[in-house]
Each structure stands twice: as structure tokens, then as C-alpha cells.
Length: 617
Ligand code: F6R
Image 1 (cartoon, rainbow, N blue to C red):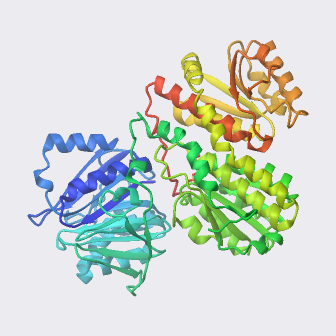
Image 2 (cartoon, rainbow, N blue to C red):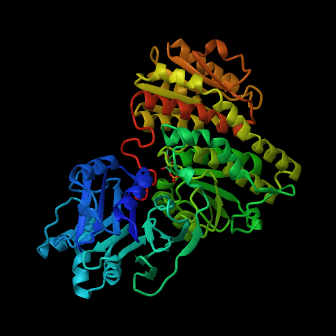
Image 3 (cartoon, helix red, strand yellow):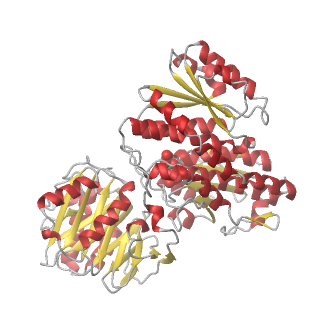
């Protein structure tokens, strides 16, 4: 949430910062702003409510000449405290206009700090928690005359999660940044340095990056950087090299990142599986957990939010079936508040694309405090959740810029299956040839997803028919249930339509009352073969829906002729093993949501009110 970038170097800071903000806009787009330490020795700030294009429009109208300089910072906001207005946009300044600050996170003691500042005669002009830090920093700088030291002093007073980037007119050649429980990476260039929420902000200029640790402050100049802790003691971050290609962060001819990311799903699955089956055995080589430890596990919790939670629901079916282990899937935001029973033999699998989601991070911390072992499944190298977990299995979906999860969801499913097979192998609940056969089925999934992608034109036609619908219901059973939930979530977040997913067996326990003529109901059919016991039950549901005049949109295995007479629309997916069905049946629902959103004229990549990384509770 909120994208921030800072730069000191030899180029136009405004150009570098605006380019970086363009790549960070997925983190929030309620307002945007820039501050430049100008060649004339001043601090110039421009900020504007709305998407980044509004700020650029403002700069084009008012002129950029006043923002010429080689050090600066920028911010793209996801509003927490204070409406998304010009006044609440970052950067915030002190009263003298000498210091500028951008902030990501929430300063939890802001009420107390504001009262203290106001009692001291300071007039705050925004409704944000962030502005309090700007005034505190100005006072601390006056007291000590050293910007890094002022930042350390103020950080010790702040509660909550925050990343700050700070500049002062009296320090024209440096930018100081700090972090606690909120992301911050340093980009190391040649005669230039960067700080940002995400490497995407600076990969046009350097791929050498350093992940800052918890409670660290970094000062960047043109020629170097210095890292300390909040007490001023020298500290070190974790260096890494950005290995993905710049094209991965660009649209590559697609109208929207999300459409490109949907198409990239076969390679997201293949890349996630690659290298994890060697000499007939599942190898989780990125994990730091001894595989033998998996043998002692007697209970699994899966914790995650949103789409990642839906992927975790699928993990439950796979792990229970393959490993005969009890699995509980829990929303991370609920997990730690209900005192779950955890101990050394509990494995907690924390799933997060961003690796930053605050609820999931706090669930990880809670699990580790209770001595449970935590395995993170994450798409973002070096993010906070894998750093704080005992082990990590990375999904290799590449950067996901569209706010709605697509390729990361399918990659999470693939990773979940790997964890299930690793557990089955370690616990001996499957023979190695059985593990090999399941892995071979997984390896065939990219081709199956490609086959689905080849037929999505039919989904686009269907979208045209549903574009004016007010409500859409989704039903599924077994692994089709999380698919129904995911399909509904995609439609809500992208097309702003009321969409609900239900376990099909619950239809008669309430949701059936919602049925009325023409109401679209999407039904995810199980395979007629694998789980034939459920197939006839869903077929009955479809007939119950039709009997009430509702419109049935059925996702079914190709060749399943039994559903054809009852489906107003039939979307066929290839036959795959039962547990892996979500890998194919989710895809038409992603396309359906994106296409309805597009036809309704919405920005598919940046749905209203959402942000890609939810770094606040
Ligand atoms: C839905 C979506 C969100 C995320 C959720 C968790 O399309 O993107 O529901 O899945 O916010 O995010 P991560 O996986 O980053 O923890």
C-alpha cells in the first residue's frame, strides 16, 4: 500500500521519480506527489489527488522548470487516514516548508503525536497520520542538525508500521529513508542511488538491490549509502540481484497488465514447478526447513488473505488426501485473534503473493511465538513474510502488476501441490512412484491451461451478455468451492458487481431464495469421472436453478455431455485430475471478470479502493 521512491544521482530527479511512480502505481492510486531538492537550493513540492496522470497533468500545466534537480522523492497513495484530496496527498511538509516526507503504513500513535504538536503551537494542515512525522522530523533536525540522526530519533517515537523517505532543503545531496514492518529496498547504481517500496521503481537503472532490515535507516547520496539501526549503530541489509526482465514489468502490447498476466499463467505454473523433482523425489530446495521436520508434523494450518486464502482452501483438499494430515485453512486476519492451538509439531503454511500482507505477517509472527514451524509460499523475493518464516517456497510467477491476483493464484496452487507431495513423501503416505505420477500430472498442467486460454473468446461473448447483470452467483463443491469463491471475488473487485460464491451443497440452505428469472448462476462442475459421487449432486443443483428460471453458466469437463441440456452457457475445460481442476476452471472466471470490467469501462488493472499490497491491518 502506497508506493514510495527516492533518488539521488546525476539525472533529473523528477523524471526518475515519475517513472518509478508509474511502476509503483499498482500499490495505490488515490493521489500522487513529488518533491525535488532543486538546483536553486529550495525544496519544491507538487501533489495532486487521483491517479498519477493527474499529477502529470498538473506538472504539464504549471511547468516543470521549478522542479529541476538531481535529488527527489515521490509517493502514490492508498488512503488510510484522510480522504484522497490534494491536501492529504504526500509529500507532507513542515511549517517552514524546508522538510518533505513521504510515508507508507500507519503511524498508530498519531493522535497522541498530533495533540502534542498542536499543544506546542504547530498547525497541521492535513488529516493524515503522516504529517505528524514531518513536523517531528523538522523539530528533531533543528535540535541536532543532522538529518539521518533526526530520522533515527523520530522513528524511535513512532508506533505502527511505516516506511519514510525524507528530504531537507539544507541537505541538498541526500535522502534519508527508514522502515519498520513495511517494505523498503535500496537500489545501488553507478553514481546514483534509489530507495523504493519495490525494485520495479528502479529496474530501468539498476538491478543491484539491498533489502533493508527491520528498524533500519538508510542515507543515500550520489556516491554511496549508509545503513544504521534506529540507534545510529551501523547495520547491513541483504543484497540481491533482480533477475526478472524489464519486459515482465511492461504491458507488452496488451491493453492491461492483467490480460497479459492471465496469458502468462502456463509459464507461471511451469516456472514454479521447475527444479522441484529430481531423481524421483520432490525437492523443496528453497526451503531452509529440514525435510525430516516435515515427518514430525501432526497438524497443518494454512493462513492467507483473499485469493491466496482461496488457493489455501485447495491445499487443504490435497494435503488431507495425500498426507492423511488434518489441515485447517484460516483467514490470516482471524487466525491470531482466536488463540489457535499450535506447538512444535504444527506446520503453518503462510501464502502471500506480495509477502507484505500485514495480517499474514502478523499470523506468521504469532505462529512462531507459539513455536510452530512456518513455511511461506511467496512470489516476492526477500519480502518480509519469507524473511520472518522458517522456510520459503517461492512461486516464480514473475512480477504481478494488475491489482487482482491471477497468475500468482495459479502459481500458488502449483506450490501448494508441491508442499502436499513433499509432506506425503516425508511421511510415507505415498509411494515414490505415486509421488512421481502426481508430479507428472502437475507438469502437464501448463499445457492444459494453454488449452483453456485458446478458447476464451467464448468467455468474452458471454461477458457481453452479463455486462448489465446486477448480481451473479457462483456455486462449486470440493475443490470447485474455492474456485466459486475466487470467481466471485474477481467479479466483485474488477466489475464492482455483487457476486457471491457458495458451496453448492448449501444452495437449499438459504441462497436458493436469491434465485429469480434470468439471474446468472455460474456452476463449477466436478469431473464426471474422478469424483462421480458429487457430479450427480451438482447436476441436480443445476436443474433446481433452472426450475426457478435462473440462467446457468456451467464450467464442465470437455466431453461431459450430461450437463449440456441444462446449461444456458457451457464453458468446457480439459479433463485433469480432480485436485488440479482449479488450475483450469479458474481461468475462464478470471477472463469473464476482466472482460465485464472492460466492457463496463473500468480500469482492469486498478480497481477502485484496492491496492496490491495490503500492508496495514
Ligand atoms: C484478489 C487479491 C487479493 C490478494 C490478497 C492477499 O485478487 O489480489 O485478495 O490475494 O490481498 O495478498 P497477498 O497474496 O499479497 O498476501
